[in-house]
Length: 372
Image (cartoon, rainbow, N blue to C red; front, side):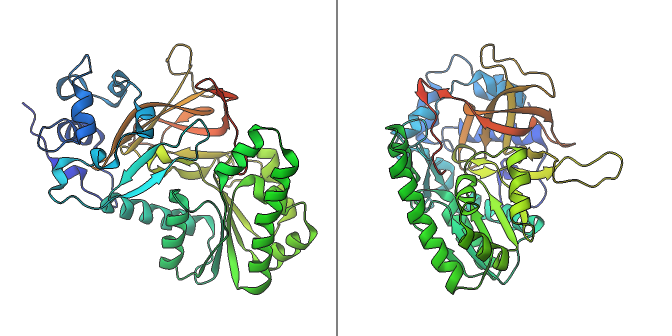
């Protein structure tokens, strides 16, 4: 019998634990009668395998059914593992954008919130964030995690936080009925808020979605303000291709532009890097971004959606996401995104991805990104 060290599940930590020891501990924790969540202890009775004995590698996470749709309705209290004690920590409840139906909820506990905050501080700093200067956040707040993390990260980096009101779910509803003029009016409403902040406040950092940055790039007043004030632009929340990124860099030459890829269902975002030239070790504006999941907490597999088999490296497939942490367990989730499969970093498990793009239809519903 291999001994199980549950302490490897503890976060925050700077250096990730051994993937195999971590997975063993996670199975023991989430499917132990005294430590697992009510949600997974109930679900265990429906499984046709034993997670405690049959899950030996991260590939075995494919044994689990994809239960993310149940996160639309389950009480968040049922998602908290019993091992956290009584009373349990109060979770932060973050929801998905509702692109593929009713929003799904996650219960993110303080230890995991701190881990993600530290990762994002590292990511913002590496991307070119200007510490001590304000951050203009043109991202969703409310039930969405991005607004929370932007605020906390800005404060820790000494930056004043400025936010606009943004309701991406309303935009998706409007877009679904083909009301393009109404969508345009809503985007104008968001841009008006950003314009006032840029005109009156000291900001050097901007976090926006690609559709909103595209709208900024079509407004001469905003182009001028961004070029005079902003030195760091982070894009996330919707997809953007290499050619569009090149256009953005041409329009906003004075800003470092970074790209992030994450999902509510992985409770975090991947680490971002750029494929460097083998000859020089430096990257160019035309290089594609590569996203490395935070293994062993998050593991990607890029698969043929028809067969479930991994596609060869360099080929496009659909992303299967696995989240494995002390606070939550979300395995074998076939996401709405496709990507090019790439080898993951040394020492990790799973795939890295590049050139992420949404599928046209997911779960029988058209995928509408809107502004987020």
